[in-house]
Length: 457
Picture 1 (cartoon, rainbow, N blue to C red):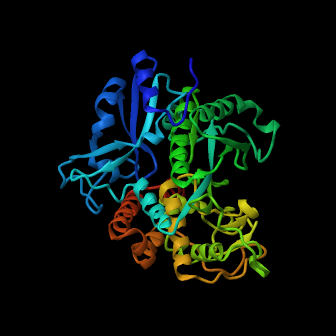
Picture 2: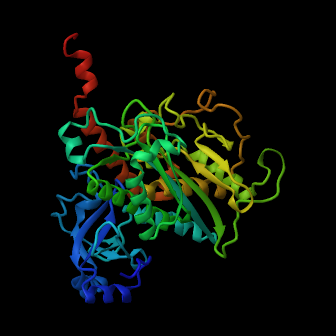
């Protein structure tokens, strides 16, 4: 068997389809939750028709909540549109074979309207718009994401049947940096690591984390769009692999009262010729930072509260962004300071920011787009960078991040920065998604309410 190649050349795909080794191609578009949605197509049909013409998929895919429910308020009302089709146009640069799905290749697609215009509120296009703004300045963004998950010994079906209660985490205690602590589960983790490498992701490190059953795999940075594509593929692949192993996994920001799942984003800029632009001479508090980087970091602080929605899009996201949860709550930056939402790390060519707000539930495309938009805001206005915070940002007297999804969407809707950077259509579309999430939560009766009030109220 020939080894997988990423990206897979179209000529190789045609040959593999003709030989029968690959018999189907998944064409998928990232939705508002960052999930891959699409269809499994016959390999010959994909090569003969879809490569040239694209593939039709229902317009509602980019206007739904996590339950796939839709309604008015989005940039497109699927009901009013008669549930017509978008065209999914494959991005051949993402074509690859899936080691965990024998005989299958996958390609990520971009969504186009019937009139041929790209769908501007599609998450991949939201990011690409910000990358285009960087390109106007001859700049390119490089990013890496550090995504955590919690692994359980039950299958997804068993977890569902138990109403997601009393599940057994794959490790029994804190295994942060532990070598022996993950021995029992290393076979499935090794499979994940191996097959992600085979799918074209470049592994850097892997380790146990603080919450029982929690694990983190870090992949090498790449240009921002490739990183987000790989991130989305990784989440999809992990779910498929653990399902095959009879286990379950969650990326939700806060599963219980323990430590949440984070998605720290490392990001730096380079000139289009590949020259890093964040490092530079300087003195005092910003030693080693170029003026451009200082403005970029200042922009993060200026936009942090207003753009939190793109980092934390769900009700549950804010359970993680709560005091005492070892996730950022105040607006600050610091040198190698993990209590700050903006941590500056590295030196010289590796100098970068680590944005620590997003959780495991974040859509990587919109989370990275928010970082770039805020950074450009700082660069364009040459915002001055305040001194780095020294000490514990969790207890410092600082402006606070939004404490709830309701507060975050209100700040987002009223943000001039957001409307200037993303446009009214995108702002309104993602606000509608957040308000749909809030409406569903408001209708729900939680276990906490039952436990508190069943007998005593």
